[in-house]
Image 1 (spheres, rainbow, N blue to C red):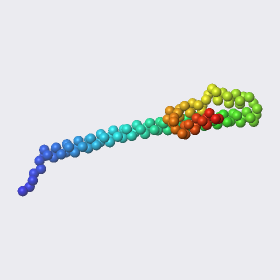
Image 2: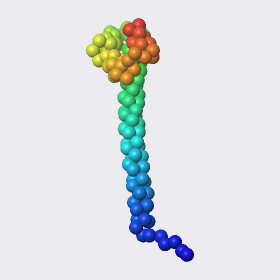
Image 3: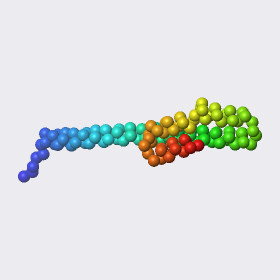
Image 4: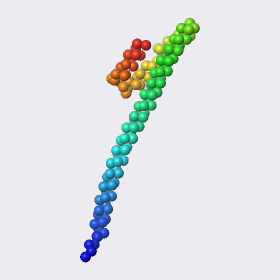
Length: 119
């Protein structure tokens, strides 16, 4: 005696399996979307920090260069450029302000602030 497989039971099981896979797919999509947004935010922070660090380095290098040129030549033009950067342009201070958004309260940021004040 052969058992008959009812088409109606097969359809019900197919629907159940399809619903399980659909729920799993939706869960995976939502999880991946959250991960993507987290990665995107981290990438934006990295680029901002990289740019801020470059700006900080450029400001420091510029001040050192102008001080060195003034010491070597005695030309007041270089001294004026130095003070314009130190008091008006303030690349280092602007870079530090951007870094403060992400690193305020950390030991590294505190060290950076104290180094800037000391220089």
